[in-house]
Amino acid sequence: MSLLHVIILAMVQGMAELLPVSSSAHVIVAERLMGMDPASPAMTLLLVMLHTGTMVAVIVYFWRRWYRAFFSNGLDFRYFLVALLLALVMTGVVGGGIIEGIEKGLLKHVAHAWVEQLFSRLDLIAAALAAAGILTLVAGLFEGRAPEVPAVGPNIRSGQALWIGAVQGLCLPFRGFSRSGATISTGMLCAVPKVRAEDFSFALAVVLTPAADAREAWRLFESQNQLAPQLAIGVGTSLLGALLAFLAGLLALRWLSRWLEQGRWYWFGVYCLLAAMAVAYLHYRLGY
Image 1 (tube, rainbow, N blue to C red):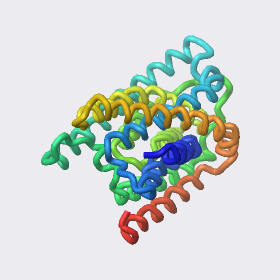
Image 2: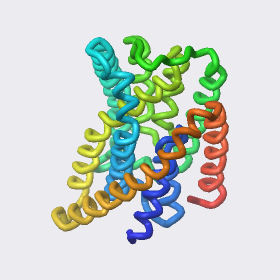
Image 3: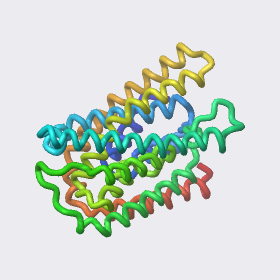
Image 4: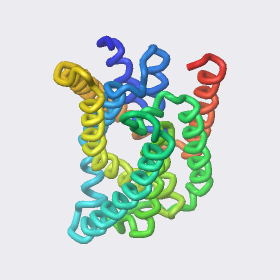
């Protein structure tokens, strides 16, 4: 993998991360178009590290907004912490159960089976994009019914957090099922104001990213024959990608966030459906 490849993938990740259109699906398709194997341990580690870079950019950019929403007083912080823990537990139950079922069931005859081995399946990515598009379209129909969020006000309720966490669990094994799009849409359908749903969704992503990094680092370590040098190469390339994705994410966030707030949510569903058709075409007609 050349430096140019890393730059291209970092730019794709940085530009797509804020939008609810599955940045990981865009990165995986870009990898396939450049002749790479998205299911290889080094590439999935790079994918997670690209997410890490853009998540750091999100923290830098959104910290003040998070502070007003969740940390401005002790009561809001306690509500936020309870909601965060409930969502994470539900994510672990649903996502962990699905991953365990895939690895121990569908991939039981594969040595060192990991769910990430499915990431090169563009047909699965197309299906996941379509599912995310439908969910986003449905949420868009209810967008105008959600109340406006105050500068400081009630945080996510327990029931809303459980639903958001459950849907986030569905996103973990399937690249293309946009985590941010699905969780924000679920929040909107549960009567959470869109701005507050966005805040909570990105906060969840920041908490999940270290665990995903650790999983991919261990997968890379377990999968290599020449452990030390290949691990160093994979981690070094991924760290460079994370830095470039951080810079690309900061540049994109300066204008993407304003455009996102002014747009109509259902258009992202339309985009996901069109992207699903494009990915399906690449898979079935061109053999990617």
